Length: 292
Image (cartoon, rainbow, N blue to C red):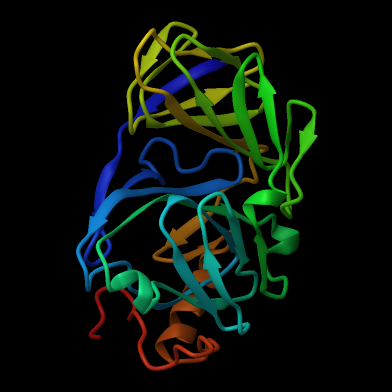
């Protein structure tokens, strides 16, 4: 009960830019249903450069993309064509299988620009793993904001502080963002399994310090309080969690409760049985350790 551990990020190169990866972690594979947590940026791109993630597949999970700065163009095999802007929630449910790409428009790439955001995956409960793939986009104006003792909290998914997000969920899930000014504090909602991540600034959790880019995992975090020191800058945090779903296996972009399902997904991608991304059919990312 309380604080379990502090996770420090691993730098991962995604081809032209790097991210900080917090989950999965050797001693903490999942937090509630959440199995993947990447912090992208803040990244500075020169003119002609930018995010250019070729089509790749997913199964048995849902991806959640949230930007602080910049813009990403999402395309997928359902025919979705969606610009993601700061504050929006982009929810792609892979289910039985989906392919997508993440790129930037020429209008963005033609000038120097910044990208900054979080990309998370949460596993689907076994009853939903093979559901038909789906895509949902929620503009920033649809995401509820509440003020708790002066702290601005956005409830991105699930319910907290008396408000409920409209974003689709498939199990008991929480995902929120909060901005604390100098000297402020925030009491955390009760969550069975949770992880607190410091996007910028630093906080203390029941007087235990947590630095920028670090994640603290928590268990039954009812009545725990995060606070900031008297410093000039504000602090931005993300909190994720929920009820655990049981063991999940992961290979590359595939997550499943069944090892044999991962093997099937490998074969399907290798043999081009996944549907192609509409408007982005030519390129693809090969399976790891296989020739392009």
